[in-house]
Image (cartoon, rainbow, N blue to C red):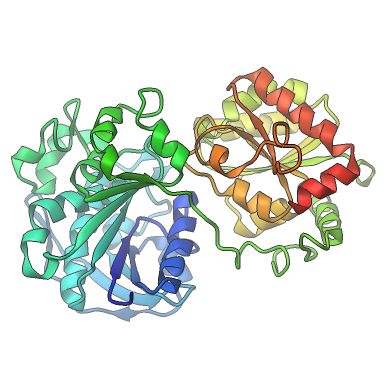
Length: 462
């Protein structure tokens, strides 16, 4: 299958640039495809954080200018190897990508020139292939940042001999983030005007980059089967459920996976002690180390410790968490939270943590190594997302014997088996009605289960 060439076009790749699970998928999935025999290569923008973390790279021949509207932009192309050894290409344009954040800042919101930034990135896909004289069988596109590439392929590239045999696959990682911009930006795309229509990228008078991917790609995927069904209804379809219903014959829901070499408690160098499903003693040492790191008193070490690693966003269930926190702290538990994102949510969670220091500690940042230590040291993992296209942290938790407590939605529903319904095969706890009572009652059920050490250990091993 090495003749199946896949170009993975994505706006972030771990460990170079990351705001969420997309970057983890971009790190792990290409490796899995390579092991299946595909010739896989990656392409992403050269953000400041990526430049800072990449030690060596080579400069590719400069492509022709990229035309965005009436502007011709000079860009550079660099090549390196990913942490897994796959070819990784980077689009260099300092005025667009040499910034402190990928898409915007917590305090001021999205960058105003995001349309130009990701039109340029989408157009540069063709320039990269031409410069390499390497043309993919599959252009694998991801989320709104590369949605326009599907339109460029549909209207222009597929009619060229070099791209005649290529096809586009567009993966929806989160339908809520669509790249919607005022209609005046459409002229920057240099697409034919017929594309600015109800059947194209037009969306209530605006230009919708993600819709371009949905309409013009040869095949669509989502990151879990359940989410693939959910987004076809009005509640979860974010205004695009009609488009997805029309394309349901070209839509597949495929559950994400994790890199079990990176997320492996038996070999993880980030954690205090290694352990596995047949030798769990090290997990207790990880818990003790995590409690000490967050400054909890040793005399509370027998209480269950909950972990929460998440982007600070309403979608991730922080509204529901704040609704129950005054009742939560009266339960016999401790909670550690790691995450960054929405500044206002971050401030509210920090206020709560300051109010209840005996129960809640927070680290308001992104810290990959600490994420490993929380997964290993926590007894349970809290993931009360309003919706969740897939979610990876519940899978990391399962891998580390850390019992997930999740809302039964999307990939959370697909990947966690409810022990309350399946006592002999269950792997976690689910709540089915998205309200404060549902979440609180499910946490109480998990705390009750925790008291039976034999049953809890069996659950951890599963």
